[in-house]
Structure formats: structure tokens, C-alpha cells
Length: 264
Ligand code: KIV
Ligand code: NA
Image 1 (tube, protein in one colour):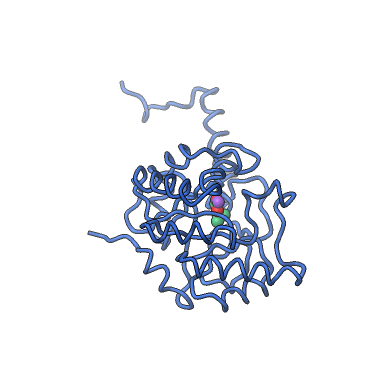
Image 2 (cartoon, helix red, strand yellow):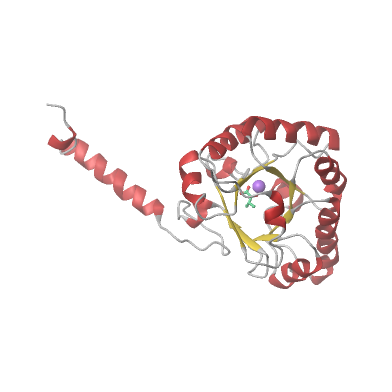
């Protein structure tokens, strides 16, 4: 039997072989990613990517649980991390524990992720002390986009570096086993990665991090627009369009279904 990657195995990769991660929301894609990724994130980006929302703020807990279940069912190797959506953890450590426990019990995932640095340290400590492994997420935190005025690369102004460094230090000290650094200039990501004892997982945060994550649909070319930090490794959008177009044409010309697809 294949054992899943564990939280300590991820934590122990600090400074070692880079940690490979992608998001997945479905059993089928997760099964493919599972062959190559150390952990798979069921990200709340699914609200935007799969459900057409403008931000992640509207994502409900039940939706995270539904997609989390699908990804756990479709995988056997990778550690599965599920995002805690906006409004399910910020209020208090108690509320956060109740919802994190619900996510873990109902999906079977191995860890949760939440956004925020120093302000979430007490909650991260509370959860990890009670059996919930926490991946933190600092830098650009999409759930705060309404406060930040959009999705903005962090650390362009050097005066902001101490606060970002303090955030990363706080989540590490609080017991997070890894931290996602999102949308951050290279020198800041490099400084943070050197300063803390837990792996940093970068997205738009340079190759200096201890690992990388991308949204699967972004790197597969399924979005009409991709930000600068995304490398498109496969053009699935145009491939899907070609397939759908051919099908539509063949239905109209009655070339589909042909003899091979027909019960005579
Ligand atoms: O929701 C998500 O996909 C994420 C990653 C971008 C880190 O949080
Ligand atoms: Na997220």
C-alpha cells in the first residue's frame, strides 16, 4: 500500500529538494497531479476558477468540503491540504477549530490552509495544539482583496518588508508546518525563506522559495488571461475548443455518430 506524504515529511524538506505542488478541485485532475506533487491544495481559488466568482470572498465552507472530498477520493500519494474559506476562521480560535475539524472529518484531508500572518498566529497555535496541521499563507492574501484594493504584488516598497518578515516569523513560531508566499518580490521572498525554519511555498514569489505551487487550470492554459508569474505548460483551452467545434460540426453534418459508435 502506498502511504500518503505526511505533514512532517513536507516540513522536513526545508532547504532540501524543492516541494512540488498544484491545486486540484476534482477527482480526475487530482489523480494525474497525484503522481508528481508532494501536496495538492484544494484552493478556494475554485470559486473563481470553477464557479465564475469575481473573488474568493463568497466561497462557502460546504463547497470546499465537496471539492475536498472529490480530491481525497481521487488521490493516494500526495498530502491533501484544503483551504479554509473567508469567514470560517478569522473570528476566533474556537470558530476556526470547529470549522477546521469539520473540513478534516468530512473530507479526510491531512491539513488546512488559512490566510494571514501575525494576526492569525494565536489561531494557528490553537489548531496545531489540537491536531489540525496548518499551512499558513502570507504576502498577497486574496481573501483580503477588498481591504488591499485588489490583487497587488507585495514588497515593492522596502519599507513594508519588516511587516512581511514579522508575519512569516509569527506563523512559523505559532506552529504552521509551511507557508505559502503569494505575489511577492524576489528579494523579500528570499529573505523570508532564509529567516524562517519552515518551508516557503511560492506562487509569484520567485525560485528562492522552498517549493512552488500554481493553480492547475492556469498552467494548463484554461484561462483566457494569465498573470506574469504563471507559466503555461499546456494549451488545454484551445484543445478543448477544437474538440467541441469538431463535435458540433459533425453533429450537424450527421458524421457523428458514425458506424463505430452505433448499435446496429
Ligand atoms: O486558492 C488557491 O489556489 C491558493 C493558491 C494560489 C496558493 O491559495
Ligand atoms: Na486560496
